[in-house]
Image (cartoon, rainbow, N blue to C red; front, side, top):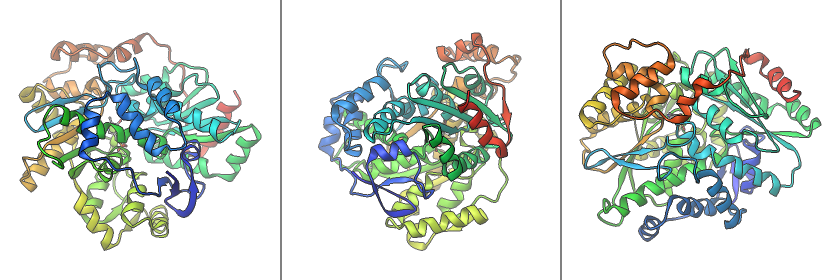
Length: 499
Ligand SMILES: *Cc1c(COP(=O)(O)O)cnc(C)c1O
């Protein structure tokens, strides 16, 4: 499988180079430029008989064709064996006769980012070796909360790598912040930034593509890469769990015939997770609708409904902070595919986006968007009502992001009257990661204000255990207290590297 850039379709590279590089030098993202692998019903039946690791190796091997199966096996076993607190990494939980929660938060940092970020360090190390580049890799991350911690945990003390994470000072939950500022490891750096996630992401992208910074790193025998979902090595592992979920349904006898379609509902921010579902669909997973759920930052809802992307709007800080995003990077990949691999058109839209904050796609793309997707959004009040309702009527405790997906799915049912299609709702974080908001949704008064007392109260009230990775934060030392502005991110990076 060869890859090209969304902004230069003449480029051809192998996956190791795409993973090691993170982003294309033209500012575009790497995408497969050949026919995607195809899975038939027989393939899903075969997947049903094997475990998650085997499913993962099989999917990965079709995308990362410059890796051997032995190499991929080593990567997958390193990533998933013994790291997850459930028997399987991505359990599919039955809620009622047609709704299923795909729980992706049983990894070490309690959010779905672990599914890819436990694997990425292994893929990246092998990629760097393959392209025979002796340089030290510097991973730069902009995070809305969960990616930062998951990347730090994945890359800590991985030889030949360093990692620097920027998070919005006022834009993450207390637990998320504690997870990052207490991060252990000799090769890690964490810095708050005055601004929101978009500021952090734009700053990081600028550093990546700055010739001056590239040169400064080169002089130190280092090179940048990315652990954000702009990295292709983040997306492939995410395709796996959709394939796996359908295989689980086949295994349980919940798919009645060859080709029976499902809906997939994804709480969305940077459009990485739902894009992976789109790839799974193109590979033969039978999908009725991909349902894109947003919080009050509903730029994607409007885009999918109208074809106009307009980020010139208020940025809300919500109780689902990992979705507080107005520039969804991975949408660029979808646009590339929907426009018929037309990098010139994509580059034009992206130029308009950076110059005016707005673009409108053509009718052919609009048509495909509405054929494949349905989109909705949900504010904080409704999010909290949904958490309460799910807990009381379905005995399911969900986090704020997952609640957004559940609420938007309700709207979808109302509007379309489709209440029969089996539906996979992606559950992206442990409720304990957003304990304050979750507890105040199901309890009239929250008397505690210490973060760890809140965790305990939520546990006592719901009878669920606090994930040990969160409980143990209490005893950890705070290591990182620096704050910078988007103007001095470059200096911050250099000072970390010179330590
Ligand atoms: C990152 C994240 C999302 C959004 O995923 P994208 O791939 O950025 O769309 C949703 N929920 C949680 C808990 C997350 O951490």
